[in-house]
Amino acid sequence: ALDGDYTLTLVAAGSGIVDIAGIPLLVNARVSWTLDKTSPAVILATSSPSLTNQSSMVVTVNFSESVSGLSLSDILVTNAVASNLLGSGASYSFTVSPLTDGPVVIEIGPAAAMDAAGNPNTQSNTLSFVSDRSNPAAPTFLLVNDSGVNPSDRITNDGRMIVSGLELLAVWQYSLTGGLLWITGSGTTFVVPDGQYLSGIIRIRQSDAAGNPSFEGFNSASVTVDTVAPVVLFAPIRS
Figure (spheres, rainbow, N blue to C red):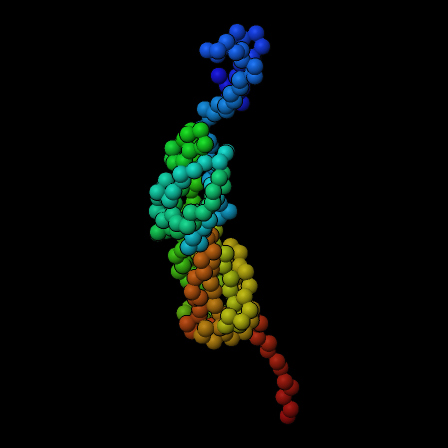
């Protein structure tokens, strides 16, 4: 039989049913029931991105019908702890807290809960994301061309700086004001305008793909950029 509502009716008239005193059945007899052989499905979802630095995130659990019996022990997690199970009927939620950086996997196995007819749920979908809560190292920078008389005197006519130590997909910024104002960089170079920059004035930082910020890197010694050619002036000689 198919799932659905059923009614069985015994029609009194013409049934020939009588009691021991010979009195015939006068009222129809009726019995109704619902047949449900379908297991409830379950879907897990979260608003957290696939790469996250969150210390915990909320996962929602949606069954295709009301169920009972779901407990924290039914939630299968890898590299995380599940807690704070809330909800009833067809809607639940719980919190997942990653243990270490790396992949986190979440699922609910079959028969974790059952509907009113006693049908166990089917296997849920699998949620997976990567936890990254480690701060990246501070990037570093060097003059592309230290053109001064001494090739390591940090006096140059070329203000280009090359950046090292950037993580894949990181967003990086540099400052020429000791960290007061920041400029978003691109590629692996930036240009310093003419001027003298004392130690700590040029700074650089990055945020990794998960949003973790680095410490700041800075120039440990003075840097001078001078792109203006010297001018020779002649003065008349008076005799």
